[in-house]
Image: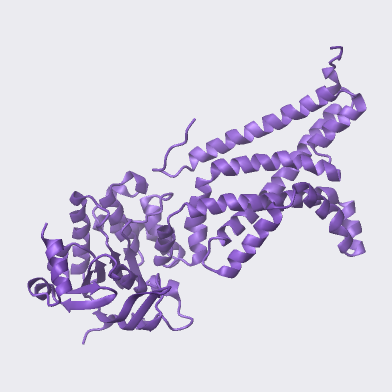
Length: 237
Length: 246
């Protein structure tokens, strides 16, 4: 093997700044998309279980539509497809204000919201129906029963799969490089292009993703313990 | 004549094609304790679940505290603040402490302040004889204690009527009495109660009236003395011979 490792490419020249910018963009786009995904997931996951058919149908349509189209297609759709439908002035405005970031964030959020929805629905469906009956029997409205009892219990039950889904979201934010969002993967490719040092650049990216994800998993494990419902089977390992 | 709290008028109920309540006519007056008994599948749980609208009815009329619950536009959540219910499986909210379980509805539905709600909750815990459990989670209580918290939670809304759906069926024998004692106190205080139960001792001691159901119909309706001494229908005699023989 005659490959010459040169790790210093990661901190010489622009590389360090690029990596940092990439990291910040990845965290920003993922965090915003996560908030959108969580909101859409909770809303549609809950609606899929309510005793009102039109609401269920609407939520089902959202889930099936958004989870059954590849994320990459959604990115292209929101970036290349939607803007031409908007008035010229709006188009100019959004292209001057980081359209690729917002399109990427939106695609990521709605796609993972549909997947999160199924996680939340499974949590709600694990709750005995009688919990809902007990809630409304004391005068809570259906909305209050969901907000105060059903969803809070479901959220506690689904921390492990929701963590996996959140990590997927973070990793999938790399797909946004295809619409030129300068996130972490985009920046590692840029370092590679400028320095011709692919292994070093990709290693840096890999390690940063790994640290981010392991960090999030550790935080979620604490959340899981903190909000565990007394009396349920305790978490393993 | 005393105020009628609950009146069933020719009530019919179907689950799909299965008729589960037929032609029910029954009135419960304020302050009365009515025990509903009968073999499983006779419709007794369904009957009391109609009173607070957990089950809808398909025929007849059901008037609760002066208001027809089948009238279009009737507020079910409004009705339910006046009708408390205790379930067989306790149904405490597992992610909340005992105190949070009891104060939830008074604060969220009746708009009570947190301090006042807590004060009431603690007084109710005294009344159901577990004042020291306020900060426990349901999982850390015995079945009998959970059911007494469930009773306190229902009472916190200051209901006019209490419905009990087999409140002791999920309990170990030694815990049944602690729950029945609380219910007996409640009856003595003049609460209007409909109780689905197999506890015939409770029916004999506390009920003003026993309603026996079979096949979705009210087959017999009598004072406890009359019911236990001289049940008229064959079905009631058969039921009593089975339930009282052990």
